[in-house]
Length: 488
Image (cartoon, rainbow, N blue to C red; front, side, top):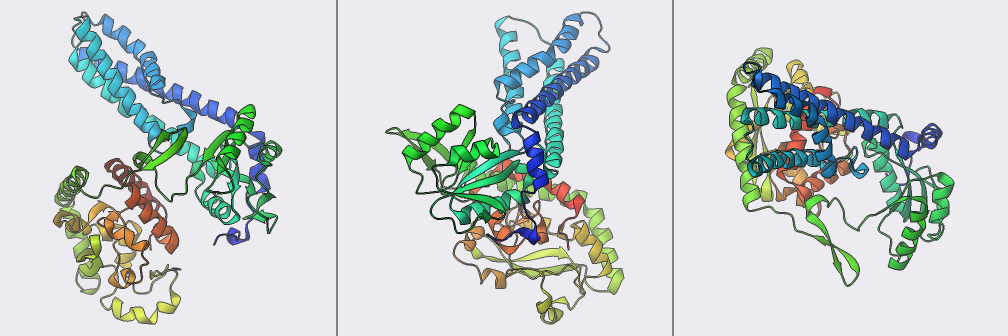
C-alpha cells in the first residue's frame, strides 16, 4: 500500500545509495554502449564469414571481393546501427525501441545494397546477401537481448541505475517509488522527492522528502542525481518547468515529465506543437479494423499448428489424469470474455472432481487480496495437477478456445462470472478485448501479483495492445513458465 515500506524494508538502502554514488551514470552507460558496439561488430563478422563460406565453398574462383566485403561488413553494420539510433542511451534496457532500431538498420542496409548494386550495375550474388544480412540481423537481436538480460541482472543487485529526484505530490511519489522498487529493470532508483504543498513527513516510502518545488536543482546536486522526474503536478507551471529545465541543463541532468495519464504510451501518443505549446495528442486504442483481423488470423494459425504438434502430449496428459483418480481429464468452466459474453473454457483437470464443492470450506484461507481465490497449498490439487500447474501445462487446452474464437493467445486473464460481477467501471475496461492464455500478468508474477497489480497490467495491455506487444509477451512467457514463479 502506498505510504508504507514493503516488509519493513528501508529503501533505497544505504548500500544501494553508496553503490550508485560510486558508479556514475556516464561510466556504466558508456560501458554498455561499448559492449553493444563490440557485439554488433562480432555479429557482423560472424554473419559475413558464414555467408561467404556457405555461398562460395564450392566456387572459390572470383570470390575475393566477397571475402573483403565479409571483413568490411562489421564496420558497415556498426555504421548502419549508429545511423538508425541504435546507440542512443535513452533506450538502454527498457522497451522495444532498441530492438526496433536494429531491425531498421537491417532493412536499411539491405535496401542500400540493392540500390547501390542497381545504380552501379554491379552483379551482387543474391545468395550471399540473402544469407548475410538476415543472419546478421537475427544474431544482433539475440546479442542485444543477451546484453539486456545481463543488465537487468545487474540492476537487481543495485548497479547500473539512474538516481532520480521525483517532483510531485506525496501519494504519487510513493506509488512511483514502490513500482520502481519492484521493477528494477527500469533502472531508476528514487533517491529524493520534492513535494508540492506542506510535507507531512520527512520520508515517503523511506525516500527523503524536501518541501517546496523551488529547491529541485539544489536537491539534485546534494544527492548527485542524474535524472529529474516531474509527475502530474498543477503547482509546477509552464514557466516553472522551463526555468527548471534551464537549471538542469547546466549540470547535464536529464528531465522527464510524466503526463496525467495512466498506462498510455507508445504509438498512441504524439507531441504536436500548437501556438508554442507542446500538446500531447492521445489516439484512441484500435479494437476493430485490420489490426484486429491480423491478430485473429495469427491467433488461430498458431493455435491450430500447436494443437496438431502437441496432440501426442495431450493424449499423454489426459491418460495420466485419468489413471490418477479415474475422473475426467478435462475441466470446463464458464468464463467472461470480450464485451462480457460468457464462454466455456477448457483446461486439463488439476483438482479433485468435487473441487468446487470444497471451495466454500477454504474461503477463509484465501491468499489473494482481491476478488480472486488463490491458495499456495490448495489441498484440492491432485499430484499430477501440481506438475501440470508448475509448468502451466493445464492451460494448453485453451488453444481450443483460441481456435474457435473465444480467446486470444495474449490478453487479460479470463475472469469468472462472480469476479466480473464485482468489477468497478474502470476494471470492466479489461473486457474490451478477448481474454488470453498468457498476458502481462503471466510474465510479471502470475498468482504472486496483488489484485490491484493484475488489474493495472490488464488495463495497460488493453490500452496499448499491438501485434508486436503480443509477440514480445509470447517470447517472455517461455521464461516465466520455466522460472515457475507464481504458478500455484
